[in-house]
Image (tube, rainbow, N blue to C red; front, top):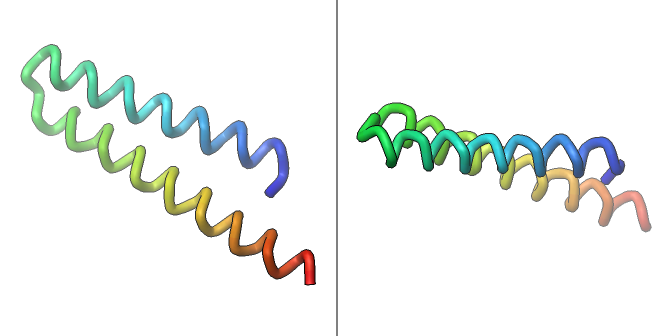
Length: 58
């Protein structure tokens, strides 16, 4: 996984956590759900990049 991909995924995850917290604080369930979705998307991207790295090593 390239460093720029790692940074982008980490930023996406932080952004998702921020949205989730803001939704929690304001009672906005759609914003909270969007934040959780952003975090899940970031986790999936990270997993996909790790799989690519495994195949590149062989």
